[in-house]
Image 1 (cartoon, chains in turn brown, purple):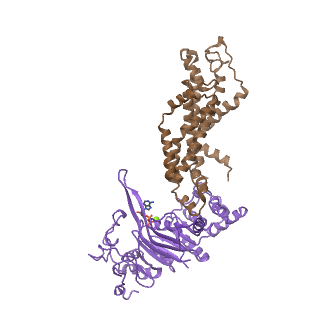
Image 2 (tube, chains in turn cyan, orange; image 1 turned 60 degrees about the vertical axis):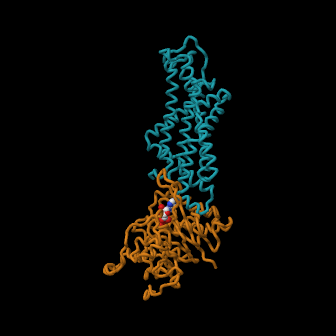
Image 3 (spheres, protein in one colour; image 1 turned 30 degrees about the horizontal axis):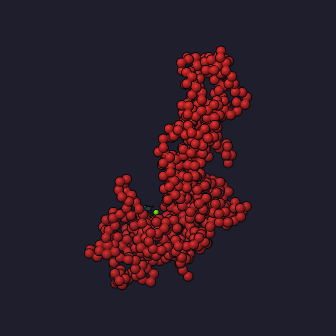
Length: 284
Length: 343
Ligand SMILES: Nc1ncnc2c1ncn2[C@@H]1O[C@H](COP(=O)(O)OP(=O)(O)O)[C@@H](O)[C@H]1O
Ligand SMILES: [Mg+2]
């Protein structure tokens, strides 16, 4: 028997793109959470170094206040990832618990829960978030993450409900019923493990959409983030006219590239997880 | 004492939707099914695919709730039981599915699959559970058990999987096992060994069986000392001691089923004189024939009789029941002359 972690890597490595995604994700996490301890944030204005092109001193150039862009890239990922992770977690937790209850219990409970999901699903999220942002003060990223999580579960909930509906008719669930193993066992041991890859995929995809919503809100200036953040960088690059200064295209491109890279690594990692969670695909 | 299993006038309907735009339609899969199984008895349920065998099996296993009639376990209606009675019934009656590829959870190792009921029902203490699992695996001839215990279903063959599901059913010490075509999905070469295993367990532990099969030869093999019920389109058409039913089939449908079994001696097979079917098409549940359900195919069809009224399952001898106008009239009076020299 191989140990769990060894097995995890063994199956992950079988999917080349997925493994690359995993490595990039690890690198981004390292850069955003560990590196800032060694590279202090430097937000001092230097009037004589505004919009400098890349150089040895500033590998990605400087911004409209003469601040190092690389330094901001290193410090600007944590916020984005925190919000994505928290929103994904909240959204997935709600989706899994409501989806499981809805599909398993059925009847009136199912009707009520799916109606709530449908209502939330029909609200256009972005305008709603924009309006809410005017009333709610998102001082911390926790507030924004909670709101994104609370709005984004219905899609995943419906698909998890559908999975539960089909899984609960399967013979092995029937066998568990005949053996009187109880609802808890059936839900947590028979049904949920069989859709684990599904749940993780859902979580990763809701993280991805949380990144989009979050960055979108910041870029448009609906969420007045004061901290250093890839979204905030794009916002300023746009509003302070980086695009007009040939030398400092980097101020706009660097955060966009980081966000795209983060999204790509999430999705390819999710794909690779399929093999890790499905024992049938394992070739031991 | 009440029989262990009793089906009284059981009916089961499903709502089906054919196509996206059509209305939901009710199909009556089982109609007025009456069966009694005594403690420790073996009943073979035989019939063509789609006739309602699995539906019957799942009613007895408590998965399907009948839409009509009563299903009794030891004289008590299962669907009106209190919690304790129902729990007792649940543990007493176990089910072995037809498809061992679908009846094991792909994410659980054999050990976890068998451990769950043992712990749930406190059959052994936690520290003794490993030994108990090995003991059960040994009982179903999975040797060496400590090797099989930590395998996932996808690492096992169909026969090995079916042995695991048998071991799983045995965890709770059942009094009655419903085996729904337990070998029909397996390689022909290993069928016999699984049947032998079930026979062995039956003899050792005195467990009663509902043995579902589409093959009368299999019924003969497994339930020779027991009873056989023949089902056609959701109705039991003949019931009796397996020996009698096979040696002297009364219902024309049973006779046709028997014809399908080849004899050991090809000379005998050739000489077997059996009536020919009028039609090979099995009517659908959505469009059942009027009168006797078998009349559209029956080789002994009597015009103006069989297509008018539906016969009921009637006692025609002390041990035999049959549902056919050849053997009884509407009041249930037996036409003795019909089986002169047969019984
Ligand atoms: N859950 C269900 N919903 C609708 N129709 C069903 C359902 N289960 C079985 N049937 C129908 O009932 C009939 C009998 O099925 P089944 O009991 O599985 O037959 P058998 O086991 O003898 O092959 C079939 O026509 C089948 O399509
Ligand atoms: Mg069947």
